[in-house]
Length: 545
Image (cartoon, rainbow, N blue to C red; front, side):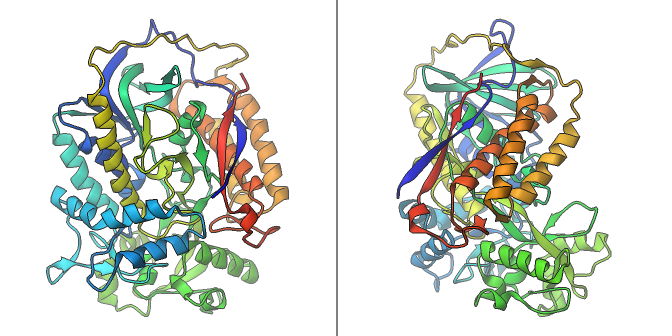
């Protein structure tokens, strides 16, 4: 599969100026950046004889993984088969999956799910056996779930407890990773910040990047507002190769109440039998695909968008009437509570939904072992482009990818770190030049710019794209970056905005480059999938300073 490379101006190598003689230094064996399922699984896989530091920019309980509702997919039913799960994943990926990666992840799935149970995660059961549900794109019921519709919350509860009890793991919450530290082309750790200690150099023999996704770049999203693509940005500034940045998956069903926060309505609702209807009550999905509501996510999201345009209505509706009321209450207690807060009863009322940005498929390019293109740096989870998802992620393969590659990164980084000497000193690093850098955030309304960026990404780099809108978005992002990204800002809100701008520019540039429609990338001016365009698009930084 051929690849082509584009370059995105990164403005600068480091977000903030620093003097190594005035910043505290800490030394560890393994540094894990990110506290979601991939990061915690990586930390747990590190040899207990090694010191491991986990940094996460919010609390350990607050991650995209904890928000996952539907479940984790694996071949756990005797009537299912690995080949079925592999085939479903590859079909959803629309020609860009790497089969060796798919085979690896799917075959490890049952063992990884059993490990989560051993950690104490209480998966839902029927007659003593794991309860399995069907989701869009799957040929068999194979999605294990917990607490009805709060799988991520339960899995992360069990894993966080295990990590907190591990003597070799130090967890630093509320710690923002500013940049990766590199010397002679090797990752040496990271520069981090927290409100109590300010900036700290964390020097590590090996570093594992597990920072999650980029949904907060979009006005409509299922993600928490911490999902600002920080890991994508720090990797790009450090010179890592990113791949498939045009592929953002939009979840079809996000609760739409004007003026309220958006809430995910899990795919399992449709797997249990719910229908999608438009404002006139027409069940429209079979007009677009024979699989109806159980078509892959890209198909359902694009169909909903087209149906909204046809009806000139801001949403469509989930009709749960085909599901027994007791079953609804049992399977979807969290969603039921959220809807009740808005005066909606899942057992009686149609639920207004529309698509929202959900899962970032593109990211740091990794191999089968989790290595990136930067020696000393490993990566796992949503921050990566591992080759598993292709051009569209199959439902409930995300938590699975996190545990499989988190484990591999932890083990492999651990083995390398154990071969490195303990006598470790900080390599020489020059103070970051402040030349041509604007000072401070005077006259900048960070919230206003962030909202404008998110609206632009939703309008022009969203579900339906075209050359005119993408080119205009790229030009606008470059304009904003010219005065925002040249400033030395002093707090996470500013650094997040600078990261969002860099990654937004990479996404717009890649989407402009891919002149076809494939998976979650839909171009109205190039509606067909073209073999000449099928390869990967890689992104590298082009310095402006």
